[in-house]
Length: 134
Image (tube, rainbow, N blue to C red; front, side):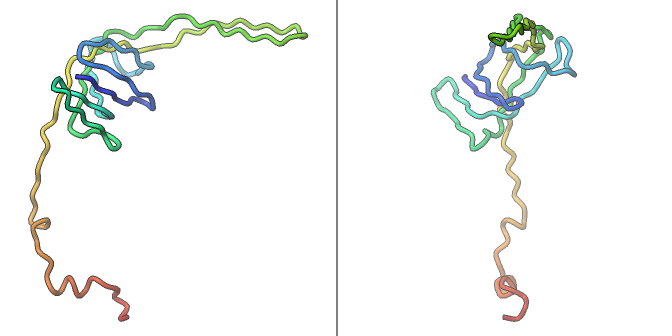
């Protein structure tokens, strides 16, 4: 199963058993569970695919927090020629390391109400227009 999901404005392609790095989610601790429900694309083992418009409903990704980590150091070097200006700064981004455990399909709830089955009456058809007397 391949899934593309959205989290905080970015899209991630994953499948069951993958490890992914997301920007730090501050309120999570090690071994916590996370559910992602903004699924954009879903493809199962049979090759059938669902494309959301905008999201695929009734599918949830369950992930487990492995650790809160820091990424590799990135060097930010600024320089202006003909001026004595040089700045070298390092930065390490805080990340949350997740393991995708399972992809769950919710059961679609079918609710039938008496309002949906009600046929329009003659009174409701007559009163459907404007009520100002024209």
